[in-house]
Image (cartoon, rainbow, N blue to C red; front, side, top):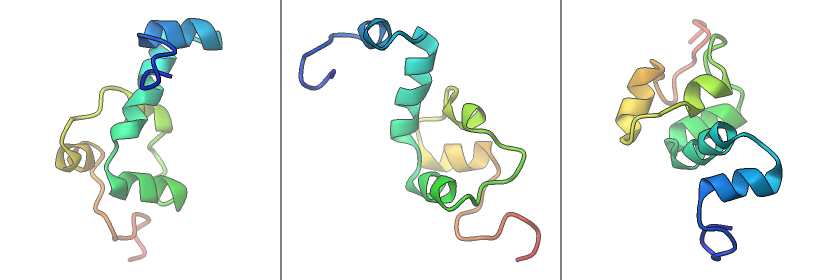
Length: 82
């Protein structure tokens, strides 16, 4: 929508979709997540205490910072069995 020029802002997307601006902003943040975090989400391998909301709210720009923020170690079991 933004890339095609159909809308010019996240606020317009929110209005068009009938959702809150903050929801659209959080969903956009998910597009810049570390590939390791995306893989862990898809594999249901994130620590149990984390929610998608925790990850989507104001993630660090650098992937290393994202991993550090959630104390996630890629390719390591998070359930204590590894």
